[in-house]
Image 1 (tube, rainbow, N blue to C red):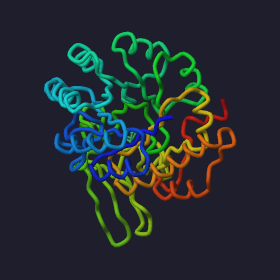
Image 2: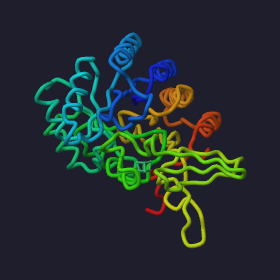
Image 3: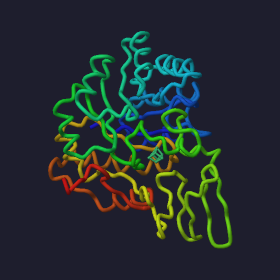
Amino acid sequence: MELVCPAGSLPAFKAALNAGANAIYVGFKDDTNARHFTGLNFNDRQAQKALALARDSGVKLYVAINTYPQPTGWSRWQAAVDRAVELGADALIIADMGLMTYVKEKYPQQNIHLSVQGSSTNAASLKFYKEEFDIKRAVLPRVLATKQVEQLCEKSPVDLEVFGFGSLCIMVEGRCVLSSYITGESPNTCGVCSPAKHVRWEESANSRRSRLNNVLIDEYQHKENASYPTLCKGRFKVDENTYHALEQPTSLSTLEIIPQLARMGIKAIKIEGRQRSPAYVEQVVRVWREALDAFKQNGERFSVSPQWLEQLDKVSEGQQTSLGPYSRPWQ
Ligand code: SF4
């Protein structure tokens, strides 16, 4: 299975490369991708440098243009496609059908991968994207159980990629408007959940509070690790109890089901985190490289090393990992 890794900067790109990525995905410095944070992403010169590094190492470069074009910005999304094709990207990761139409009409030879933001969760939908836009691969949302992924693998007319490690969203990707509810901006339209300009930290003698557009998201005692405030992972007062009412911070990790995913026919594993540091990328990619190599060598005798878990726990949200919706023992 191809190991597809994130890079939000050239140092992160090099880290992914050195740690053993098979493919690396990047975005441009604007709202055409779903990690539009200040200081992140690539200008043309950096993208060319990244491509040269990738070519030298036999690694693929994908460009994410996976937000939904807004009425006032269509030319920006077209320009992002033009730049990525001119760069020589191995594939464009796209969610919007209008943008796919633009690619197919202007660049019929260009590979397209359906972004997770496209929220394709059934075989009929995958067939539609294949027939209409000749997509080569689809990235499945992180809301499917392993049984559902297996059923899709049996019927899918295109290669399938699933998430292996990273933040867990509780919503179906491409359909979350929680951030927009408070800030007017969401990942799907503006490329960012919880825009930094709306984030405020307040220090007091006993605690640290995080706010998003003035709404209190969480309050931490001084010894507690504080997380970047997203609405879904805040602690809220419900009746008389204050807790993570929507979702507890946890990272997805599917190391233990690598053999199962391979048996199903999954072609690629994606690591989430273009917003993460080079050190994070290096750590996670290195563990996953070791795990996939160990699986290749040992096949069904593959087992998860305690050291891998220990290393991943250190960089996980809430210092804990989960199989997320992949595991539904009650079904
Ligand atoms: S609010 Fe939460 S579920 Fe929605 S996009 Fe942001 S992190 Fe994901």
